Image (cartoon, rainbow, N blue to C red; front, side, top):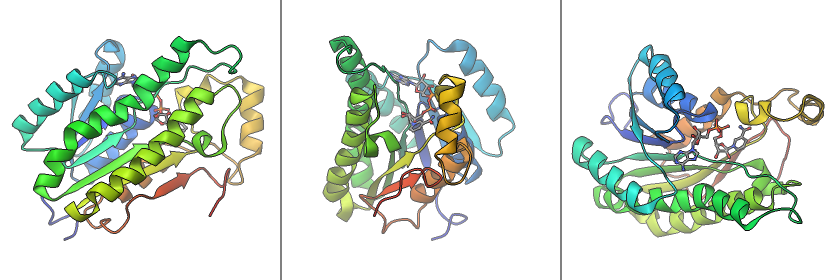
Length: 253
Ligand SMILES: NC(=O)c1ccc[n+]([C@@H]2O[C@H](COP(=O)([O-])OP(=O)(O)OC[C@H]3O[C@@H](n4cnc5c(N)ncnc54)[C@H](O)[C@@H]3O)[C@@H](O)[C@H]2O)c1
């Protein structure tokens, strides 16, 4: 079945109004998906800007407030979406935060806050969508990890642990759901041109770019392209894989 003849798939994108998430929403909508962006209600200015940006997109993108670190909130949100739209076909877990500090200075709060979003959030969303996907016999889950989960990064024991954990989680879930038409993969971006990286000091950013073989930061479009590839109906034989999108910054086999 090609994209044109496939049913209109419902796609949830967590962190949907963020730097990468909003471009993922745009490309999924352009590919004919009915997209629902989930993000924190507190970001009202950004939500308003996002709604304006998406108004021009050929396709449907709506916004639903949700806190992925809260299991009950995810359960209620997904139950409501499933009732309204008949099910969730594609789940992209792109919400994420940083709480950087070297381990000697890291507080338990910095550790736990990060885990609650970057790792528990993936569990909370997958746990509440997986039964619907396996029952209907179709699902595409794409979890956004990071090159820093593959290599480790100074000041990011929490972030690197969570992002490596996201891929372990994805491989395990891929095995559990492979026979049910549900694929589970990770995309690991390198350094991208988003507010998260813009916050890094100018000289450090220049050093990072000098170390990227392609010679530039990744764009949100580069990442969204990989997500759309894995979320396609005809990507059913790719599961448990990690797709690095890092301009050659880290190569492995
Ligand atoms: N930007 C990069 O260079 C880069 C590189 C590698 C990996 N990543 C990963 O890609 C993903 C997206 O990053 P980004 O650059 O778009 O960051 P971003 O900060 O622009 O977007 C992240 C979004 O997640 C949302 N969010 C945070 N906590 C949430 C919660 N509890 N519930 C719901 N939403 C919540 C934020 O409001 C924000 O909109 C993250 O998982 C990040 O770790 C980013």
